[in-house]
Image (tube, rainbow, N blue to C red; front, side, top):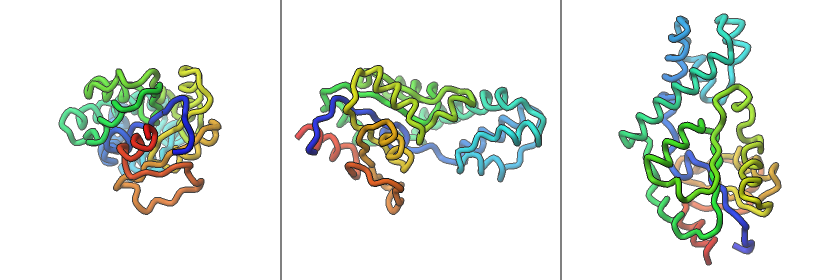
Length: 219
């Protein structure tokens, strides 16, 4: 790697830990509807997960539910099902996460997942000491709208770290876009679940896993 970065900021799901099984998140949406005494339309619930939608108008107009109340319960339920998957190992840490120990500069973490879920993952796997700042999305509609590809949380992490020249490491096209919007370089981690994924913007670096990335950063 030709650039010495002041800091490295990581995504979480698909980078440090396996992505959450989609149907678990669909279950969480359906459970939320039931809490509001609405029989869920599973296909609609699945679409909100697959397309990362905040169904504000639908829950208000179609179901007569306050959108903010619905979203906060949806976020709490999604965090609950993910904690269960993490405890059982269904949502497992990647084997190469131990490579983080070889990085000496300040590290941050910015994820589209709920902040409570990120905190649980770091505590459960004793990873919190690696990161000087962490951001998951706030459990509100406003928080959901600030998710990547918006650069809101990345910019907050950079401000916390006091740096401008950083590298963001992610596994999604949204990660590349968000990094560039924040004015920093992007490294795309093309793990097995991302083989064949097309990127709307070219990343500055691309790796198959964390070990190759860390080896490059420490060379």
